[in-house]
Image 1 (cartoon, rainbow, N blue to C red):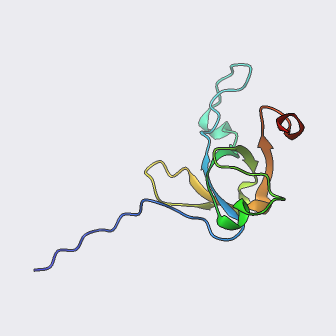
Image 2 (cartoon, rainbow, N blue to C red):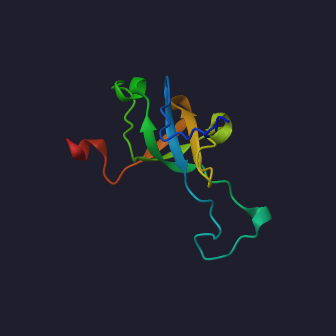
Length: 109
């Protein structure tokens, strides 16, 4: 009798102008310290870049790097059922609204 093994994947590589993002946890409390009930939860649309496609990596007009914290529009984000917490999303580059930096690009030069 042949046994079948469930194949597990270890790596997700985005294709085209897309990146793989680990979404931040939703906010449970306001900045002032007020606890929010689950119904009033504010959707979180920030996350950290896990992997960048080769196309994005080679594009000098897209200043994204692995581990950057980004703000993205979640409408076209595709959830990746890869981990139990299901916080991974493939996001098109055009849906990235902002990148958070500690210093301006002029200061880095």
